[in-house]
Length: 459
Image 1: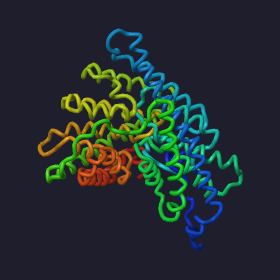
Image 2: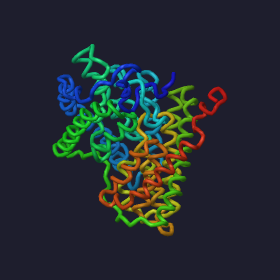
Image 3: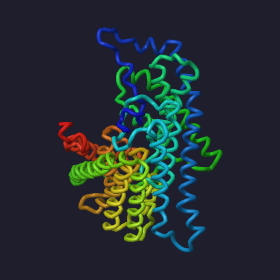
Image 4: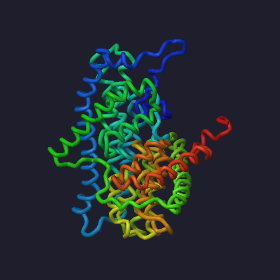
């Protein structure tokens, strides 16, 4: 059994289905947008944005509640003083058992493997595959593996959108399925990255949507995303559970670009590309071993991830949770307390998070965005003490370089790094662009980290 990208992709797979066959005249996008079926699709996208974004909000709230209970509340009730360093280990083993069993025994492989990054192809998950996508991601995210929620949410949203179309009209044309699956994906990730526009941009760049397809899919998707963002805000106010959007509580002051920071941007891009290669190599190299015995090997990798987090706590004195999880919640705290981290602790944190991230990519289910951003921020904070460097450009360059290396989406990587810093992100945009371009070019220039692609039969 394999889970290559042909299985349900992270983005609106099948987005290229609207390509015009050779010899046929391309349809007029203006005429399509004016047509009654398209206007109906817009209305349906707006309606779908409400329940799908509510499902996404509930999923994130449930994951957050389990994390808080198991890693904060429960050890505080059981132990006096600080949480023992070994506490995450049994939960990571359970994480591996549950995730491995879900992927092994339920249809759909629990979604696509995050080791391949943001890939598309194969269409959204069908109705019988959705439970596995949900359960595998829930076990992964709740119990400590180092992956984010964005890819599962995109897959779940796309699957729910396509399912709705099937229920309403079983013989719906492929274009209708593609448009509504895309709208569902947009709605599910509407505010997770801090902006519905950024989430939509991530999906469109990952799917390679352009030309006529972009014109036809962007409107329903953006409409569903806007409605979804409104639902997220409303549910936050109503429930008080939180917004679950990526944001920094305090932003380092922006600085004017200098020759020194531009030079460091080149170096940061190179470091990001090399570190991204190592992370992907770990994940891709482990996949053949995982396929030997999915459940036992995934549990074993969970054990190793737990040991890595335990080692970080014993050596640094900081919480093991800095190594675990996606890093979305830990990123604002890391930036707020950047001055409290010594260079040695930052290097140790980067190494431990890299190892845990690589192992998680190889066997678990989730998205690659937030761990890449966290590691990039750690690199930027460590580099901020270099001559001519400052904290804001260091963090932005690190995030941009790591996202470019792991996602291989240069435009999205630039936006992720600059928009996170708010108004101060404008001042660091030139350095971020340089770091992203260098990381992106080097990532594609380096030999493939996939051992199967480098084996003689793939030469």
